[in-house]
Image (cartoon, rainbow, N blue to C red; front, top):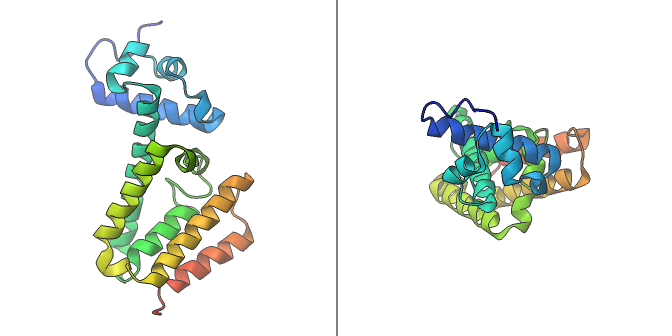
Length: 189
């Protein structure tokens, strides 16, 4: 293996970031099954031992990749909530926008199909559920109304429909669903 840019100086955060970025690129191009220890290490320019220093197994790498996705979604949602002048429903609006048009998770991102793995993988499903429970607890005062839960569940259904049909762009019908869901967050039951 050629000498990597990381071998001369200790740069653990840069190595970890490179491993996650290359694993994400491989997963987006070849699916999660294409994410092998050898492929990720080679793409990142590190040894398999270097990868194992950061992630103890392929599963740990996939979980790290998913945790990184959740951190990106968190940042996007937090920014949207901060910019929203109306507290009631602000998390739900931010979540719907993240699902439909977000940069981290939205329909048009490669992450949308990658995140499908959470439906079938118990450890990733647990990470997602823990993330959602923490978010709902954090936003209980503004987003606990049943009608807002219905909006979030409808967004989840739209997301699942979108990623399972293999569409590349959001249709006019889905834009209308998005707009209607956002409008619902401003109404009181």
